[in-house]
Length: 95
Image 1 (cartoon, rainbow, N blue to C red):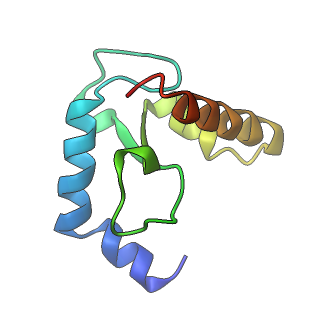
Image 2: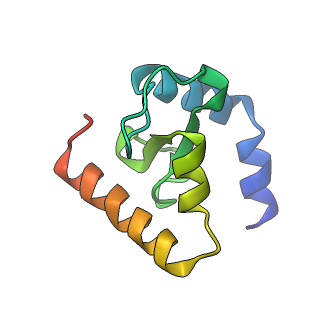
C-alpha cells in the first residue's frame, strides 16, 4: 500500500464514512453476529476501485473473528471469505 492509502485511512473523511456505514450495518455481514461493541466492528473495503469515494457496495462490516479470517495468512481461508463477501454483496442480502 502506498502513502496515500495510510493517510486516507487515518483521515476524518474515512473515519466519518466508516462510522456512518457501521451505524447502518452494525452486525457482521458475514456471520451475522450482533450486539458487537461499535469499536469492535470493522468497516472493510471489498474493493478499492472507488478509493476515497466509496459507496456502500464497496464496504462491508465484519466482527473481529471474520476480519481475522479475511486477513488470514492461510490462502484457503482467505479465498473462502473473499468469495463469501462477493456473494453476499452481489446478492444484496444486506442492503
